[in-house]
Amino acid sequence: MEFPSTKVQTKPCTTKQSGDAAETLALQHLQRAGLVLLERNYRSPGRGGGEIDLIMRAPDGTCVFVEVRLRRSASHGGAAASVGGIKQRRIVFAARHYLMRLRRLPPCRFDVVSIEAGVVTWLQGAFEAG
Image 1 (cartoon, rainbow, N blue to C red):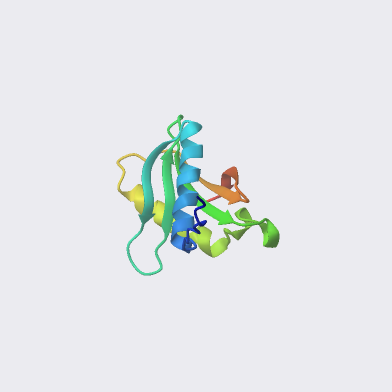
Image 2 (tube, rainbow, N blue to C red):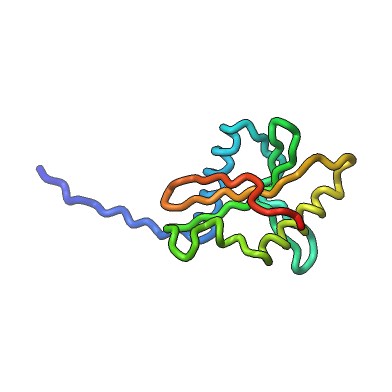
């Protein structure tokens, strides 16, 4: 007896779902490297504020603010190149807001984790607070 084949229809992922999956992949990559998650999707209040995808603590105590970028291909400069000046300023703004809550300021840096065609690349110190 033959059974007819069944096609499973799946909806394409939304941009949010793709972004969340990329953040999870980046988080796992950073945790394997010894970093500890402090916050995920931290938002500073107010209009024009920023969002930080991941806030991590490195083994040496450095507070690492991580922007995660997902691109299907490296065309148009790739994922890391898409973190331009305006995005950097918003991340720095949110980082300053986050740091105001702390009693002591730890050393800090801004990293970018890019995911292109399934390859994870971690750029430490990708930009400065300026």
